[in-house]
Image (cartoon, rainbow, N blue to C red; front, side, top):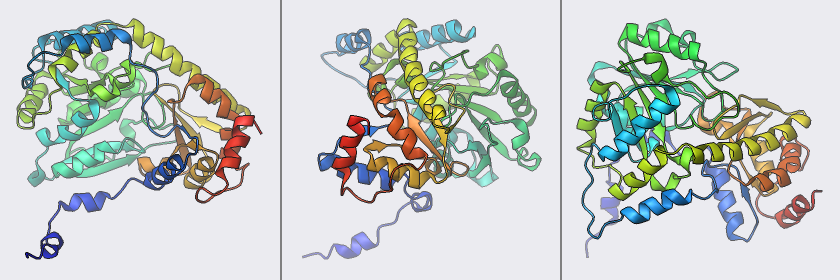
Length: 412
């Protein structure tokens, strides 16, 4: 018999996996899973995966597009989808895009964000990739695996990236700069002027500006600006990342698009032909239907605005400080200790994300995703506000949580 244990011990892995480690939210998620398995009722604000049904016309489109024989999808994506994305950009931002050269369908914004640095950085040239922190963890993960130097930039109190936040010494080596608006996790919106200043500096320094706009159609007041509007015709030196997930309730479909500079899009096309990550064509047909319709996005926007309003009014009435949270899918709440607050809420059957899960600068905040229904938000807002203010006992484990869940349901 061959001794296999010594082969397992000798296995080598990419050291970046160990360097990045597990998400800080893992402890919360593991405890929540044990509670769920024990029969506890949970309301989950932790993951941005809304419960509202995918609009029926999108589901009908995907069913109608499933062929008898499926074949490999082409890297460039279906022309009908590229045209639909370009049409959306024209309606939403007043920007004309060439569907053939400036639109790249992708299998979800997350995948595209992670893989994009592989097409643009040279690990032997000490290239740097920067982004504001706290933020979506995938910017760092894609950067590190691509071999570039990661440069998180600590954001100020309003959590908006500005030119002055980036050290002057960084620009000579800065290859890619990520901006996220509306911002995940805080819901802050970068103004048109701040976007313009970032874009101008990037052009001066030959830095590619990458704008994560996955939440661009989820807002309460004025529509957030896009970097495409700032860059003008040709979108030279910039790429915007779109997603069907929140706009259209298609998180499980894994469909998005990268649009902008035609030369940069060609780089991504060359990169992605090696990876084989195009969405199935029946999903692309459904995405084309989604991008061609704005009414369903407006309906979903109203639902998220109602959730935001219910929660925000309840939190502010309780004296909690809500920061940003003007757009996107999240509320960002200031607390004394984010892990302690998350554990207190877990004891009440409510799951949230501690701010430190989103990097340096997130400590002392918690993020609530606008995922539960409006009625669920209304039912728990007082309990959540009290827990975040430290008004309920801290808990460990599952013991006693049934009684606390009953207290939550009864409003006491």
